[in-house]
Image 1 (cartoon, rainbow, N blue to C red):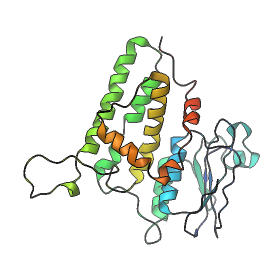
Image 2: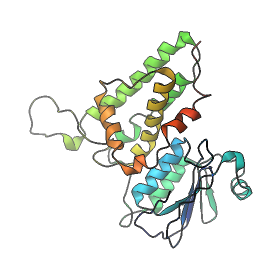
Image 3: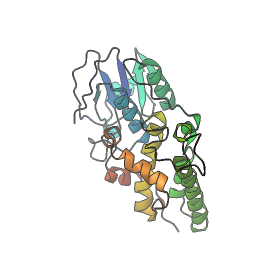
Amino acid sequence: MCVCLPFVCVFTVCVYVFTMSECLTCVCVFPMCVYPQAGSDGESLGNCPFSQRLFMILWLKGVVFNVTTVDLKRKPADLQALAPGTNPPFVTFNGELKVDVNLIEEFLEEKLTPPRYPRLAPRHKESHTAGIDVFAKFSAYIKNPRKDTNEALEKALLRSLRRLDDFLRTPLSEEIDADAAGDLPESRRRFLDGPELTLADCNLLPKLHILKVVARKYRSLEIPADMTGVWRYLDNASQRTEFTSTCPAEREVEIAYLDVAKRIQ
């Protein structure tokens, strides 16, 4: 698979997220290298929301980058030496190692700036925190094996999703007509902060995708149909290459949670 985006790099950045060698070659003066976690076959993209988050950021920035998946079971010695004991993803820039995904995001937003690269930070501060607890509630729910606590954990997850749905259905300030009378109209925006993807979406969408796939597979739980804001959000994401081309196959997500999703007893 080859990712070629319309831009020539002006500095060297390597983003590492372990998986195996499927090399994406692009013509670039100073190459950017991305190493994501490999899937079950040791080659395809594996399930890692943090890796997808970085992929989406780089894609939205318009950066040409090379991708080599690295199988953790057969991790090359040079990568072990580069970041011993470090879990992916991580980044090197001019020999400096960066291992925290939040710091990597800040670094990319600081270095890849206008006019060459778009700003991706949300304009509305509430967009930063929308859905902030959804993945934690999902993780507690899917890892729980106890029948006596399953219902409470499921309700907590659904409440969290409902808060996200309320946010997505509530109009942002620029959607409100100050001169209009009556109740506020429901928002029809495509993403968290408006019509375009931002850093907030790069963080949330990969996690929502995992939630949707895993909850359906291992708990027969669907995101409720009446959460129209969440479904509109996911449908709009499915129309963007930045999301779909960086998303692992659903089968990879299911395999990743095979031993994580606990059977209710």
